[in-house]
Length: 269
DNA sequence: CCCTTAATAT
DNA sequence: AATATTAAGG
Image (cartoon, rainbow, N blue to C red):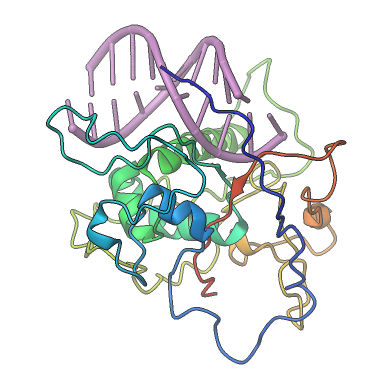
């Protein structure tokens, strides 16, 4: 079923935002919780853009990218949106901001209710799919599990000998009320006011430490990783590992990497 | 149907 | 390596 369509490269690459240098400080660029996806994609997928009406959800029809023969209907009776045919959405890039939002949502509802759908809704990032979240959640859980294991591994031959991390700051796993759910779920940006979870290891020495973009370290000192809230970054530790960077411009030799979707919430942080 | 997990693909 | 997708089981 997976047929791939090759050869849709886009000459444009926004790979170089220099927001690190000069953020438009005036006010937020976006009102709140508005996902940024390339317009092309938004249209192509008929993703409900809160800003512009999805034109009846059907298809505005520009199909720049897909020259598809717009067959009347293919969904045999299922009159749904079908622009998404043959199109692959770019891989989602979990930026620290996005991840933060994810973690906040998880913590907010408590582990028990933290299922993909709910998380997705709470995050209120449009363009985010349940699969996106599910996949991330799966990984996130593995991460948490490892964290726990380190805490209590009395005699496991295979216990990971991590030099650091002698504790298990995993807060989400245990506490948090059995939130039966007063969580308001609406549709649009649903970023509840974040529960001042003062600190939470959104990402530790193993999670999102990769494509971390250097946050606007204007005056915030500390190499705080946006994704981990204000985790107790060891004063001298390796926390610095995040300065990575832009894989955007490196890593791949020839030139054409896959398109990536970096939708991100207006980082309200 | 949705969720979870593991395995696998890209 | 990070995500996506799928398969299988609940």
